[in-house]
Image 1 (cartoon, rainbow, N blue to C red):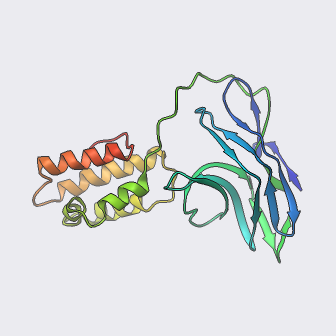
Image 2: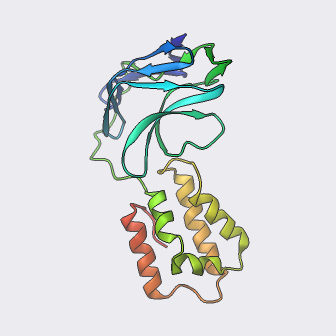
Image 3: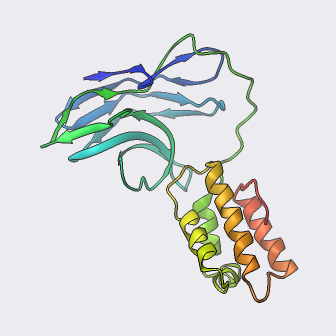
Length: 217
């Protein structure tokens, strides 16, 4: 059954610019269909999307609306344990236990993100800042002298943390992920025989700025 309950997808909308105008229905065995509509986040960013059909394999899933590195966005059924291959923007179905599929059939209740009247008044939001482009940073660092310098650190724990942070599936704007990234770089630099040159630091910080990172090293 498709439904929404308090703390399982049911929220209230008011002055806060938050809305999900689509409906989600089960249209076939292990298949959910999202009607054409739009998703507006609390930051005021609005995404319009066409009718979309999502087929599920056996397992436990969440239905996420997410952003690809090239800026395109889509709905994707994501295993409750696994990679989403894109930056999650909003979970729209599968709250609580998730969407359970057995022998090709959706079983139990599917909780859907639903906006109802009366959501507490929010603040006025300016245009949303771009999310940190983690994939862009990874591609720019890969094989570069900036990455090779970090690789030479004697602090292997910091190096491992950097790799884990860069390859994480956490949301692009996850504050903890940003903190871990900055901490890893600081610890890596402490383990370098020769630190980054001023020119390399300037290029590293310019790269972070180009990839919309609110941090500098």
